[in-house]
Image 1 (tube, rainbow, N blue to C red):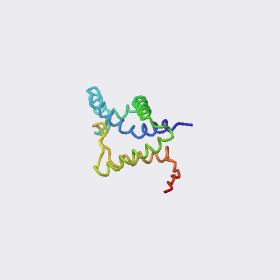
Image 2: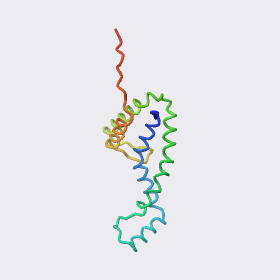
Image 3: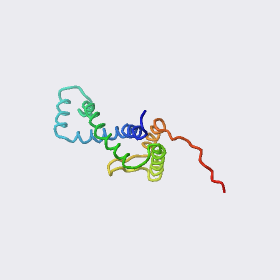
Length: 144
């Protein structure tokens, strides 16, 4: 049995992985030795013009990416001070507010680096609905 915090961590890591992979690939592509390796491969092998050795080496980044992101996400969730039982509702509300902001502004910029639109947050909401559903509770009705 997993805690809601562990499930939320796994969902967030899964959701951000393609973004982190793209950032890492972009950063790696700027190193001179990568550029030289790309040119060498293109010179001696029949590859597409847009070939990048970074794509061939991306399997090396998978464990490193997970090891770098997962502890940070886990710690960020822990510092929120939310009870484990309240995590699904909190995550759902947060994603809904991000979707509303993305609808209003057209995008949401995170960490001054990544621009996300509504469809990005829709993917996160889908992952949350599948893996961390919010329990519908009957609300107490106050007698007046």
